[in-house]
Image (cartoon, rainbow, N blue to C red; front, side, top):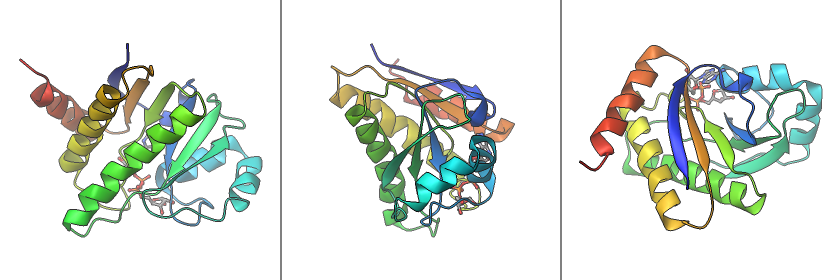
Length: 172
Ligand code: AR6
C-alpha cells in the first residue's frame, strides 16, 4: 500500500531511497534547497551533475546521494511562476516525471520539497495543492507499485498549507 505524509524539516537530513532537488536548468547548484543539497552531498555530486547536460523545466534526472543519507537524488526543475496556466502543468509534470523516474530505478521512498515555492515564487497553497493531488493521482494510477512519499516542508507556513490542502482533499 502506498502512502504519503507531511513533515516539517530539512530534506537533506532524511534517510530515504531518494530526495528530490528543486534545481535550475544548469543542474550545477544554486541557493535554497539546491544549495544545501550540493553543500552536504559534497563535490562528487557536482562532478556527476556536470555529465548530465542540464535539465529542462519539468524534466527529472537521477544522481547518487553521495554524502547525504539518501541513496539517490532526483533533480527536477520547477517552473518560474508567471501566473500562466502552463505554470501549473509544468509543476504537475515535475512530480509525474520524478515518480516515473523513481519507478524505473526501483526507488520507493521519496521526499519532495515544495518545488518552485522559493526563488521561483510559486504561491505556496497552489503549489501544495498540485503536489498532493498529483502524487495521490499517480499512486491511484500505479496501484502495483509501492510509494512512500514524504512532503518535506521547510517552514511553518508551507507546513500548514500542506496540512490544510490535505485535509480538504480527503474523501469524507
Ligand atoms: N529542506 C526542505 N525544503 C527546503 C530546504 C531544505 N533544506 N531549503 C529550502 N527549502 P527553493 P525553487 C524550501 O528556492 O523555488 C535555487 O537557487 C524552501 O523554503 O529552494 O524551486 C535553484 O538553484 C521552499 O519552500 O527552490 C534554482 O535556481 C522550497 O524549498 C531555484 O532556487 C523551494 O525553494 C529554484 O527555485
